[in-house]
Amino acid sequence: MPISALAAAKHICERSGWTISNLKLQKILYMSQMAYMGENNGTPLFSGQFEAWNYGPVEPRIYRTFSRFGRSPIENIFWCHTEECGSSHEIESLNRYTDSLLKFSAPELVSITHWEHGAWAKHYKKGVKGISIPNQDIFEEYCARVRGK
Image: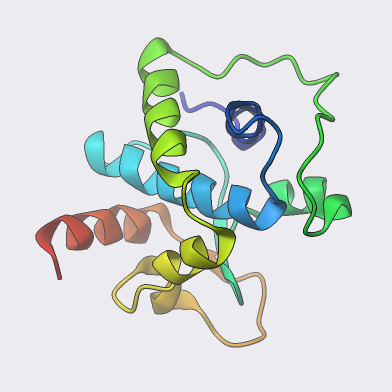
């Protein structure tokens, strides 16, 4: 069973040293989900559902949880969230993805997730929120990126 999106978000924020914005968190969550699914035959790393928003894929519950921080770094508000981040395989994978993605700026990550052959582009409608990005399309995006489409 996948870990919760909130547990993954907490882990990414901790790994960053509490230096990332909600926007950057969203993109790291998405690309971590995509990479894990690609490496694990479509199995999601965490529960949750991404939607196609203006600035790329967004997990709306996580977005709302951290929206109060705006563009500022997310602060540690997890004092009552004690769920562990999963198996050693899941944690190692999330650490690897996070470490490789933290070097990018939020605008660079937005640009990466706006790939014309990607799941976001397939579902995005300008100005419309609430359009789900199915996990199967996220998995297919990984496969297309690996093939170099």
